[in-house]
Length: 112
Ligand SMILES: [Zn+2]
Image (tube, rainbow, N blue to C red; front, side, top):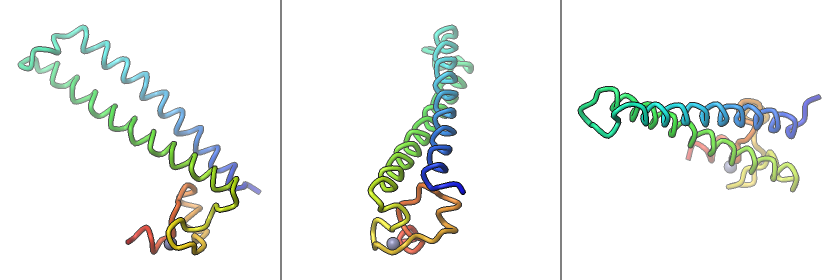
């Protein structure tokens, strides 16, 4: 049987892989902007690179937040508070945890 910790650690590895990939993409975009005339705002290629860079940065930020969520969930596993809503103290439905293993609140509190 898979424990919550196993699932969270599996999820963590996935997000770390995503972050590693985004880091490589970020480096590639930065290198590309160095090669082109990115300072020239009339250069269409420079605008594309700036857009790509913003997208990569946004994805990396989202992945970092996800990582923080997972780490917080792992801490709750260690302290025995996993599966308990952080706001109201009610148990979080198993179905919700199956979909979002790092969920910190119950459905009712998340909807609030
Ligand atoms: Zn709640």
